[in-house]
Amino acid sequence: MSECSRFGYEDCKATADWLLTQTDVRPLVGIVCGSGLGGLADMLKDQVFFNYIPSESSLTGLCFCLAVHGHAGRLVFGTLKGRPCVCMQGRFHLYEGYPIQKITLPIRIFKMLGVETVMVTNAAGGLNQDFKVGDIMIIKDHINMPGFAGNNPLAGPNDERFGVRFPCMSDAYDRELRQLAMDVGQELGYGDFLKEGVYCVLGGPSFETIAECRILHRLGADAVGMSTAHEVIIARHCGMRVFALSLITNQAVMDYESEMKANHEEVLQTGKQRAEQLERLVSTMVTRIEHNNNYA
Ligand SMILES: O=P(O)(O)O[C@H]1O[C@H](CO)[C@@H](O)[C@H]1O
Ligand SMILES: Nc1nc2[nH]cnc2c(=O)[nH]1
Image 1 (cartoon, helix red, strand yellow):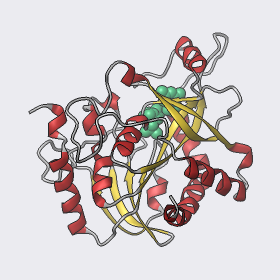
Image 2 (tube, helix red, strand yellow):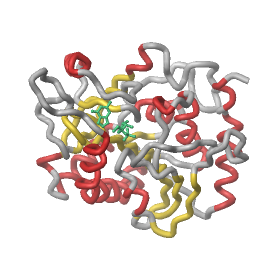
Image 3 (cartoon, protein in one colour):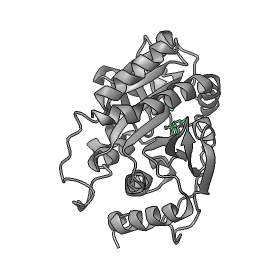
């Protein structure tokens, strides 16, 4: 069986159907928590959660083993300020060695659970020289670097039950949700550290060289990370609205004289420092999204 068909429609449906027998929550919003940002899932009330199961032969299809420090590895259902949500408290990355279709399987499961809006968060290195550590960057576009070399989650046979063969990506990051984030951010007094920009995904796990950071910046990227774009492509393919943000956890090293060194501890530390504001931004947005959906 090919990798693509192993994580196909039937797998997603079986998993979603099983999950729906385990909880009364019918989520309209699905949230993906980035490195150090798992506290978003802890905000959910009346939680029902499932640990990602470290087995290839899992009945539920959620056959993942999660080892990345800073990611809990749970699918959490619950309500956020009264709105039904599901959260991936921890995600999967290319560098963990999983096929790209497996990394993005939970997003299709979101769809089959009834999710309409996906909110994706990540930790990223700042390439834009105007960005500071601790800034929150609303993602307006991405550069899918692995996709340039053919590593796209939609590569392989297309299943029309999910979406079309050639989905548009120029509108991937919903304009209204970006505006909503800006409005909510201003209301909360986050104006000084709320930015907008382009996210570039690389395969990782090594952080970038100085030359790589310089070229990514010249290509138009404002932040660099190792996730998100694959999830967004899959979410858009099956018609969900997408909002995504990066927490700028470290400054990408662009200068040969610099003594700075990217490291995962700093990433997690910055996550902790901004956790509360980020949670408030996302949870306030969630309370307004349903209203937004009415005229979407
Ligand atoms: O993208 P998330 O999962 O937030 O994590 C980011 O932070 C980790 C590196 O510190 C990498 O996994 C990178 O992708
Ligand atoms: N690739 C990459 N991922 C990150 N995640 C958090 N910071 C970084 C970074 O500087 N580079």
